[in-house]
Amino acid sequence: MTPGIIKVLSESRLFTYLVISVAFVVIGLSYRHYDLRARSQTHREVLLPIEGHQSPEATVEIGLLVDNLYAFEANKKTFDADGWIWLKWTQALQRKMTQAGATPGELFQFFNQVDDWDASFTPGSDAPIPMPDGRLYQKFRFSGHFYVNELDFRLYPFQTLRLPIVVELTNEKLKGEGPTLGITLDETHSGLGDYADLGGYLTRGYDFKAYLHEYKTSLGEPASSSGPRRLPQARMEVSYQKAPTAMLLKVILPLITIMALALFSPSISPSGWDVRVGIPPMAILTLMFLQQTYQTWMPELPYITFLDTVYNMCYLANLVLFRVFLWGTSEYCSASETDKPAVVERITRIDRYFQWGITTVVIVIIAMNWYVLSHQIH
Image (cartoon, rainbow, N blue to C red; front, side, top):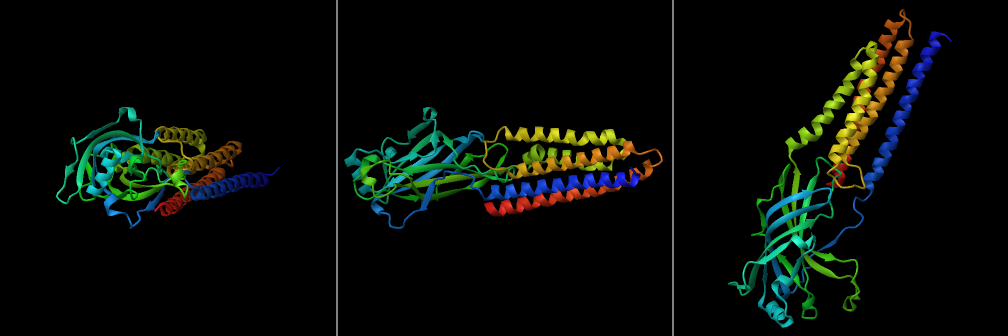
């Protein structure tokens, strides 16, 4: 077999591998498109806007101050919080409560509170306090363990965490005692305390809104046969984002360093084939270790995060480099001493094409994924 035919065959094998790599990219992008369109959460709360025809006499005003928020565990989707909650209600509602034997603390519950054994709930006064406008007021000190139903990590590590504290008006004793309870918010005095920050995160603020929580069932109650039950709900969501320093040093910088080392490796002379061939496997093993490190504290997710996509592209880039280096090693070692200068020149040229091509493809696909994902979420 002539050297020309061998050259054509060897380069055709390299071209075939390139086509296979492109096919993998297309398949990966197709799956990513499907993954982005899929719902990240199967079961969600049905929250409806508060209707405007609430009865003034049966409306309860709720305020919430979160003093301390701590012990956030992403893999368990839980956190702890301490603070104050207060109620304001009318004399007409108080008369119905007295008739039904209900207390102010029985007007509501923390909907997303879990592990009641270590929770505390203490009234701030022995009895409700009359207000100048004729209503009654009472505050309560609370401390508890809360659950986050929806943690969206699709933009990780650039995602926004929203940790909710949900208060729902519910009182079985008041059934049949006039109109359904309504809700308003004391937004002026509600907010966050001085210890609401999370380690490694920046506090971006909070939203305090009222909704109607529609249950998917009437719980079998005969009086609710007309449809699902709806209960008024006050929801405070505290927003956090990763601190730039923590994100850069722990997540981004190690990844960039490993990929820079891998993408610079084609600049090594083909005569150093033993060094070149060893770099992509080393980079892949290091990337796997880094990816598993940050995934240990995250919950099991039904979707791929932005950072997972970055790692997947890095794996593919290193596999392509490894195959190119194997081809270059085979060409260099099988060439005669006379042909080696020409072979080295050809390998160097092809290395340069792959180096710039892989870098461009990785950057473009990552940028496209970020654009589509960020616009879908926002």
